[in-house]
Image 1 (cartoon, rainbow, N blue to C red):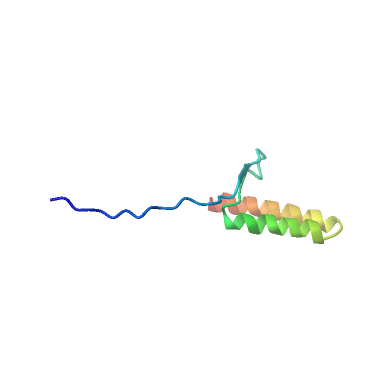
Image 2: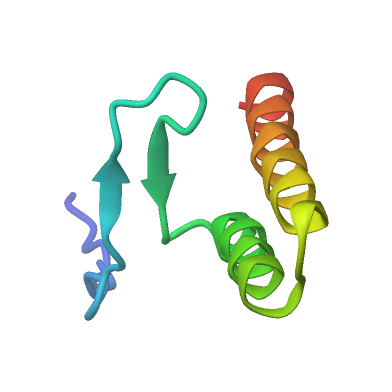
Length: 75
């Protein structure tokens, strides 16, 4: 006796976001399918646009270093 199995088709992602392999040791791969990447790079862009002086670069390096540490510990 055979039984029929209903298979629900899985729709592929209609618009996957790009993945960039930078080749830089600390940056590594930037995967915009991960929502956390949007937070890191959005914060970096906001910092570079709206903060002035030397603190702009200190905050930017802190964001990149924090992204690296979080990725290293969680990934």
